[in-house]
Image (cartoon, rainbow, N blue to C red; front, side, top):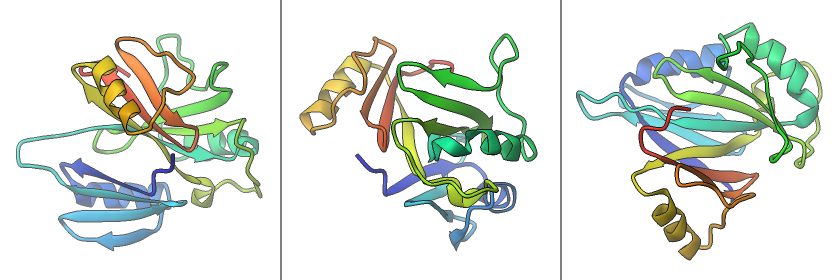
Length: 188
């Protein structure tokens, strides 16, 4: 599954413009007070002004070439604080997904991830930069009923990824496009 376009709501589209274009270096395709559209590899990532009084936030991930992970880590550390777990660890590896991960926040509180999936080799020419964000490959989907949502997605042909998942967390799709279906209120 590929995520060609992703549109999310944001409280302050203008603040996100500065972050995504200046800090991360992603090219802007459309800019207004109501909408920001960025090119993130093969994905068009858009933010639209959220309803008044709301401050939505999301989790989404960018695939990066596996060989770029060390360079991506240094590049990202120079720009933003990385999110750490309770032990202070801020670089992660998933055996089950055969992937290395870095997490960070944007000004809206979105939890962003750079993920190097070792099963998806891609060319890497240093130095690391925004051109190495190959696509948006994950989007978090919060729901009251994870199994029912996963079943509904399966009826559309979107299968569990390296599952089965749990009552609170179940990814569906594949390495190029995943919906991370989670129980509403789950802390990332």
